[in-house]
Length: 145
Image (cartoon, rainbow, N blue to C red):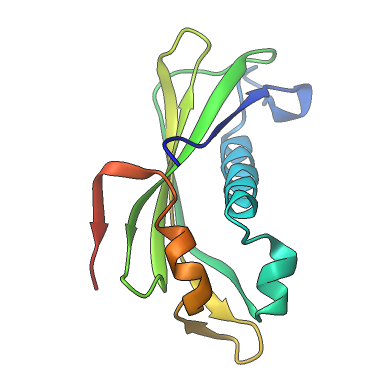
């Protein structure tokens, strides 16, 4: 997979009192895109539940470069920046691009997989590991402990 992105129109509900996209809407779009990406590699929430694991987030960081306004049609992509060899921990970077092609923001998310029965962090089940490595990667991608 070379790229995974979606377009969104900034809605009324996404706008704050300053008439630009509210900070938490960026995280909402990034999360929606990650769920769609996981589904595209056959790791939807139902499949994860059947295998007793799910994602957990440790950190979300948003860096804002340019305003997004109601009605803007934006493109959001998702790339894997790093993972451990067993897939247990990972970082995704999402780029938010304006209609004119300029970067509006980046959202970086650090997370891991959790065993839903034990409520403890776990390695990614083996049958899903190869799928994770098909996710588009950043230019500075790292796979290390």
